[in-house]
Length: 269
Image 1: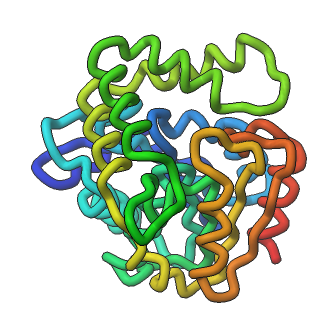
Image 2: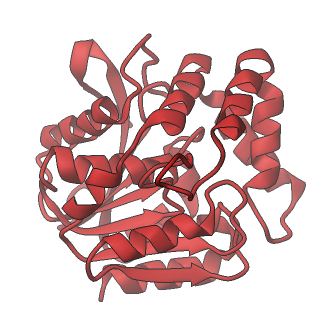
Image 3: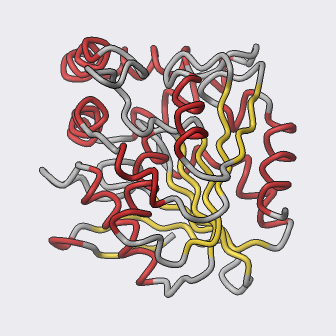
């Protein structure tokens, strides 16, 4: 692990596995987790000869938690600055949940710099909350309740999240692990990115996904509704939708073996 300094001397924690390999995958985590959520993918990717670059977004994991900079524009700029610092080119860009919205913003804001393939995992995109003219997503009040709980009892919020994340039966230990990852985030990062989830509109981002795109979504997702995956499929030309009938939001773990197999198939197609 090392740090890349981005805007206003904010340090972003970067994890670079197999740095000498030519095939590269860059993975952006979701709210309110960290790069560690990809533990069960990074090993598989490394074994298949990929360089795997993950990072903790500002406010999460081991990265700095400044007072500001939690809107999608700045978060996607952080990703871009990490990519520039590592001099990456021709990589697969992966985003989970809020990370999916951030990588789509990256595609528009940075014209898809270096990206040869895009993977959206349970992506909270093009917007997370419904509004007039966009009847998909979750009610705004749902996110406001989440923000209120994060401001008054973040351990309970993390506990609730960890119990909603998965749809298949799993051990309490794995659920507690996801809870602990959420609690490693800063309070300010958790709350301010929740504001972004509530307010950001990424509808204009979708048309910039001009590379082969895979949409991976759990049919039983209770956090980011499956219908958002259908919207992404309808709006991104040529996108492939991979539906996981038994998975919830934690698509990367619920049907772990199948997800890794389908994900690797998409990368190597």
